[in-house]
Amino acid sequence: MMVDGTFIIEKSVVIVVVFAITMIMAMYSTWAERKVAAFLQDRVGPNRAGWGGLLQPLADGMKLFSKEEFEPNTPNKFLFVVGPAIAMSTALMTSAVIPWGDRLHVFGRDVLLQATDVNIALLYVFGVISVGVYGIMIGGWASNNKFSLMGAVRAASQMVSYEVAMGLSMIALLMMTGTLSLKEISEQQAGMNWNVFYQPLSFLIFLICAFAETNRTPFDLAECESELIGGYHTEYSSMKMGFYLFAEYANMFISATIISVLFFGGYNYPGMQWMVENVGVNIANVLGIAVLFAKICFFIFFYMWVRWTIPRFRYDQLMNLGWKILIPLSIINIVITGVVILRHDIAVYLGF
Image (cartoon, rainbow, N blue to C red; front, top):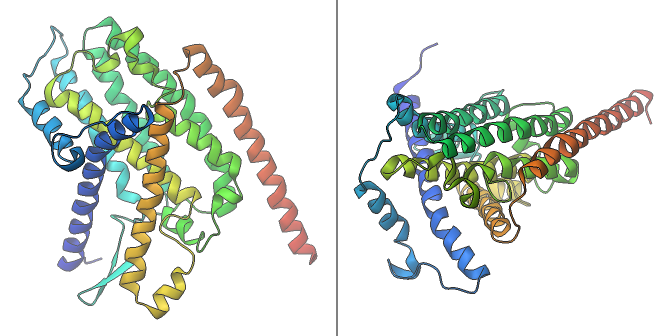
């Protein structure tokens, strides 16, 4: 099949824009984190670099760029460099299958607001997320530091444990939607037909697992300063350290986006079809993008709110929650969903 040059240019522009938005959101999440922390602790937060401290992320980036590159005495210098690169790459790759909106009509063409629409998008997301742990594991092991290694082992066991519950929580949602495409899942939630109303337990389990997958408090055992100095990135400096920190905020942004798409309708909003028919496709879909980002910003704020409110779990509590509570709950949810779907199908078949 021949692919015209216009299609390649269109997709290239979409990919660049998506990556740029991910980077900007991750960058300004660091500013928002400090502002939210200041608000919750009755402080001011960053207020010197630019109006309201809006240039603080740029100042932090320049500081990281200008810091001296440091490498510990390790026999794995190559892996020491590869670790943060893997963490950052996987954080950015996840955004490729997310539907940021429906379509825009530009220069006589309908431009899909998604880098690529694959029918196994959810499997792709889980696959990329599972690779992300290698960046942490490799970095901690190659640092030749016992605290870094312990943090890496904690991160690996934590992610493996909570990925099981997260995957099982998705099975119930897939049984209901019948598709792995994030685009189709978004379209099924037109108006206020959100999946969270039908699968509240799946949403709760997925949200808790998302905290663990992104190493956010109360699941930040991999980098807790009181026990492990700095965790898996103790020996890192300059931009390698920046990549690890940036990857965490990029993962937080992407996970907030996936939660919004899977359970809260994504770019859909009440009256969207009326807006398309009476106001115009472009205006309606730009408003849809704004609605999606409003949902994303709420969940990013929720991540930060939890961080500065709830204390860190002990490691045994972390494992008990994952294996003894969340996984059994996910299995029970699958069984309940199966019974409800079977009952509905039998009723339809019998004409009730």
